[in-house]
Amino acid sequence: MQRAIVALSLAVLLSVAMTGVLPTAGQHHHHHEHQGHQDTHKHHRWRTPPAAYADKVSHRWGDDGAIARGKALYDTHCTACHGADGLGTTAFAKALPHPPADLMHHFHLHPGEGDAYLYWRVSEGGMVEPFKSAESLMPAFKTLLSEDERWDVLAYVCAAFHRGFE
Image 1 (cartoon, rainbow, N blue to C red):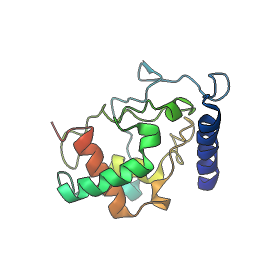
Image 2: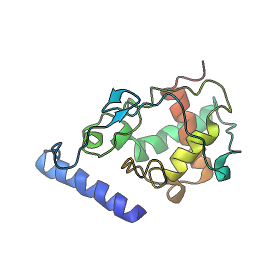
Image 3: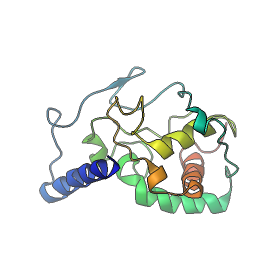
């Protein structure tokens, strides 16, 4: 399943690169309403992660080394959909059936609060419910990145887009 999603993503990217044309709304893009924000992916609360992820806590928030490693990984694996600005509004993202998360919209206010959810989302991507039913095509990065690498990406996201904790 993971390979099929990656293949579909690459096919859309190649199509856009070769033709310069994005799929139209009737072909691949669906308008979604999430918590009152049409065509965005913003939530006012996180879902409770499954038990296997419930105890996950990062010790890398604010770690400059982790942030630097995470930036390199983010640039490689995340920018096509979430964008260099974290808004999830790239040309590729607009062709997806479910918009990528706007990483600037957050409520990760304290270390430990939301860590398990964020790690679960990066690990499982759109391959599990309720994200699968919402047509999320986010890859399950547990098959692509080590546990350390996933925490490094999250350290970068926290520093760059959440701008740390409030």
